Image (cartoon, rainbow over all chains, first blue to last red; front, top):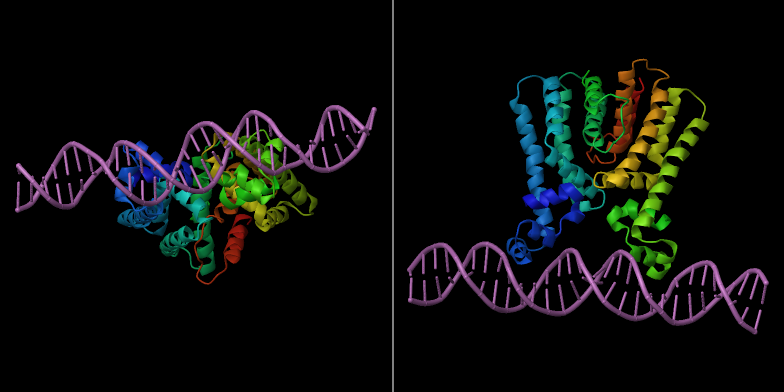
Length: 171
Length: 171
DNA sequence: TCCGATCCATACGCCCCCGTATGCGAACGG
DNA sequence: CCGTTCGCATACGGGGGCGTATGGATCGGA
């Protein structure tokens, strides 16, 4: 499973090959097919594992920190940018979901749970529902999109520019 | 080339297969290898074609419309969301660039040219350089990220929420 | 009429990958 | 000491994909 998530993070679902995973673990296909029915079973279980870590665990960590909505949002953004491996899996899953309906359904669950959580946080200092919703979308897009944008920033660092955008967002 | 871009849009670079493209066009591999040296040559030429259309053509169209920075930005956002095929290619290229350095270099050129254009447009009604840069990043992330986010919006349509975010951005 | 360029089709060898069938040692309970 | 179960390894058939080599077919021009 771990090796599978590594491959997914590095090369997308097409890179999750039974034989290459087995090689990476120093075993052969026989070993793989002892633990999993087939390749699709592995992929499904990988998504299950990811969902648990990427949502439940993240919300738990943010909720454990003190402060109001603004502080928790900042903490959430900090946490989202920190774990590189998890982030790469997420990006791979999102691209995957564009082509696979089952993955898209699962990702929709994930997104809706995160959005619900963020709505509560923004609701701490915003009153208008439409405004909250737009801010949530911008937050999600910043979190995801900034990893797909490779532009330079005229001497500024990406982190600085990103921080400026977040400041605008929680104003 | 067109069939290749279709395949890229639909399934990423791994879906651009010599034999399946040939089948889709009603010919065999022999035909393909007459027009292209190999598969990687096709991929490179596809990226060339995409770059011309996605940047030069887009800027040309937006510049042709009257109005100031705000109006052109709105026009740019409208145009970006309109052409579905081109958008799908762009998303596929962005995910591709995460794994392929050559693609990443090319995408960086594209992003920088777009950012330069947007900086000029935002500069029409913003004075602070750091603010302009953050707004440009948010614009790019909204444009890209909204296609990777599959959350629902409590009865609101994605288009409405997106429009709200854009209004905040060009305020 | 013939020749060369153009635009393919056919056929081949090779590699990677999936899933299955079967063998096999090591550990373990009785 | 022995049978069973676990955790693989080995071997196989089948499919798909890449690139190459070579064999036409058509068609315009000399």
